[in-house]
Image 1: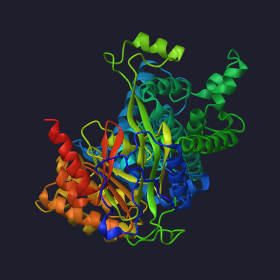
Image 2: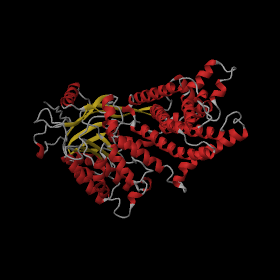
Image 3: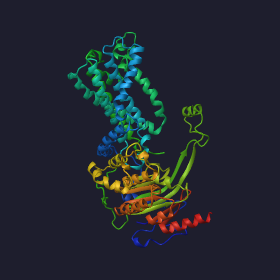
Length: 325
Length: 274
């Protein structure tokens, strides 16, 4: 073991007394010699040091993420309760926000534009659509700020960054559960009483949450690199909402002969529409199985797995870059 | 993410391969860091010029390359506290960011043992959450278990001294003064033993009592076989806290040695400039 010693600086002092075993330090070298570099690299390698900021392997990453599961849960809950902490009405907004949203859409699409024609149980139909859609859109919007909104945390502490978009998607899921409480009241008011098919809500929500988490991770990586994505995303989401059958029925358009076949397929495979329709199928009596496109459960499962696995891998691929700049 | 010792304290680091050799924790080998600064020429330019830039995939006209660190090499060992000194803009913070893995070196390499934690001045953890939540979430994020966080909670709050005057810990962190925020952040980060802890002037906003307390904690971290890097413009803090100092000047390492000597040489250098 030989430490490089280049006594170029005049102010070189003697070795520190308490540590005589320690090799003398390398002095400042304005032009670094290549020989010294290999010595230092060799020293680092001999002691098993790793290159700073290198991406962990996938199994390591998954292990780290699993050990942060309590962090993810606690972070989501803390964010949810902090969300309205500045508002005077506080947590009442958890319920008020989705209800007001539904009221606005009812006024515009139900009363003014009259899209309710031909859709039975329009209010439950619309409110379910709005709540389920809000879960998707707010998860994606939260994803755009997952890294940039938590830079202090990312820079100060070390943890798998995927914990952030996952926690934010979980927060939106908790928010949706609040909305589902409000939805239950609305459904009962409009004559939809609990029945066994309501149990289907659980698998639908699980698949939908997987899908949203995956998309949220993918968007988090894109927005961490290009912050402009956060500005662009509301427009993308609005467009997506209008084609997803939130306030109109996809099966009405799909059943129309004038619509080209590929448009029908695209509408029916749109993941947002798939999860919305499955939720309506579970909750609303008049929304029967014949109004669902074929193979809808397979499509729902496929989208969930594709988004979750793809989004996770995509996010992990840039793990070392988050917090830079 | 590298596996870290689960224990909150104790030098549970892998035994060195060669016993009589000091164990390095950070090795910088000929590190050059160049980064691009945008908007040097009057804001970000008009929207149309930005659009045409994106379409043609050219870099922004106002972008400029800053060569912040030029060929720095050093090895830091277990149990060392290393002060970084140098005038403003000499590349100290840039170097720390690179050690933390937040800035990639353009040339050369930085090796570290474990994953370094960087405490900066403005690094609020979660500003809209209460101090209490920050302590709990910070601990969990560092990989502590719920039980460990519960055990250490009182110590962390007591160490930070946040609650000495009033019940500040139940207030959102955005309401804290910069000194209080810095104290709580340091207390959270210091609750776990780190192999490498990087402190970028984060302690300078604390009061005298807290400075003494954090100096003691840094000494403890060193005993637990950690390495602490400290950027400070207070030469007194450097000589009191650190045993070794690196003096950076315009991106080059000018001197590396015992803290007292390096600080003395630095003082002589800055004195001459008046």
